[in-house]
Length: 312
Image (cartoon, rainbow, N blue to C red; front, side):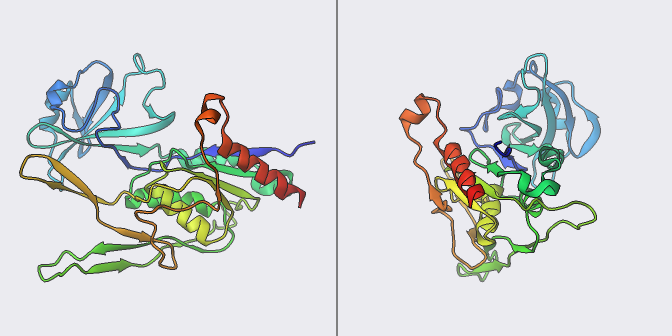
């Protein structure tokens, strides 16, 4: 009898959306008064939860944050949204960022805080059942978690459920913002990812495969870097994006805005993966003919890998 195989698609917290990734009728740079009220519900000020808004035009009543933006929490109207307040099939918490000119300056998409709980429920009794399971596949090919502290922490929380010894996370270098700085970089050491306390939960110790693609970025790359460096399992697919999401936006004289990467991210040993990306251990080319035929060559390769591993 074939052993069961666990496949889990992961999203990490706090993705920052650019204009090419519209959410509903929203896109960065649009006047806030141009957003239709239909389709959105439960508008409120993030920094003053008691302040409920009747329409988008009232967003100016929200207090300014430290970033000089007004944060408005909102949800999709279930009457007009088939999947409710979700993005790519994942429940999310949505925040619109509005500047002084009443323009939509940013969108924050935070993974539902229940994501870890969903992961634990998906694993079920697998950690205790050991060899009864063929393995676990984590699909990070569409995971675009932002380069924030919360996103990285959540990525490491997922990884902590899969290890029995401490792992080192990715390293980061950031520019030194000082008047006398001549382009120096400040190195931030790796975080230590600890396995779960045994009395709270048992780590999953079966075989694990991670699927990655050029759309794997942000906190997902922090996860992959630590996963590979610690030798926890195999990575399959295509090289990741090479962008962990730490960016700065510069306003040009023409009014255009330029967003550039402002960090250098690396494996624990110092090997940088920005902007080249993280190469999978087992590359799989995604071909047009496979897509047209409805075949997922990367997932098929992962299944074959775990099947072979179970026979050894």
